[in-house]
Length: 295
Image (tube, rainbow, N blue to C red; front, side, top):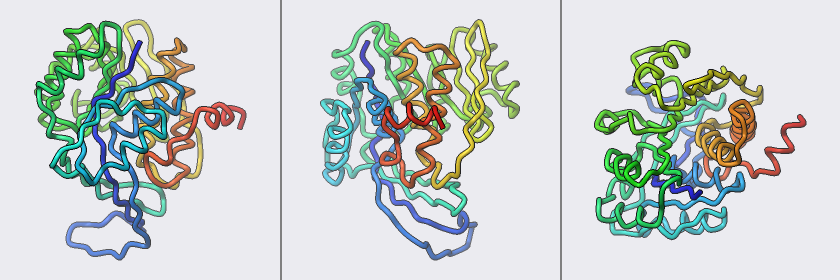
């Protein structure tokens, strides 16, 4: 089984602030740092650091060459990352002293994918392989359809939720990985129990992983609903927590772990990630996650 992640690669500009800037307000930042980021890149690195082989496919500009180097250094196969003339996607991230964040995305090269390129990449994968997607690249609807035609297992993180998700045939998704905001946007419910019930009604064959931040995480499939509480840690930066969780969860699934084992494994990894600043650089390595189970 191979994992293909067709996802974003970003350059993150992170600003440390006392609070998130309000409309019309100007605040002086305590610090500005530049990190590698993008949901796609973060999730690929998390999968690789969890010990699973992953192929990342995406597009960058000439300003993003260090992202390929990071992939290679992290064990991510970068064969399908293409460099073009459109600048690399980037994000402006506000991070408060309490570790909360607010993010503005510029898609850049991430939304320059074309169908011929997608078809070429997919020829290298087959039935039973995992296709991991987020909504920071274009043609998500096409990727889901073509991946399903090949018999791939579609894992979708519908973030950020917008009109592009509405164009997708979500009945083709095997596993949804989402937080309570995205769950509410898909189902119209705001209570976690209601979100899960509505998802089962809408997509009865799909597995759902619903993350609730400090309130823990749920897993649901046709037969069961499982809850795992979050670990209590001092958060420095929550930017890459969800992506870390996603990567480690997928690794656990590939290794055949039970639902509760997978949630525990991914929860521990996410807890370690929020204790460091940045996104990709804060993703822990597997031996650190396994060691943290004893804390």
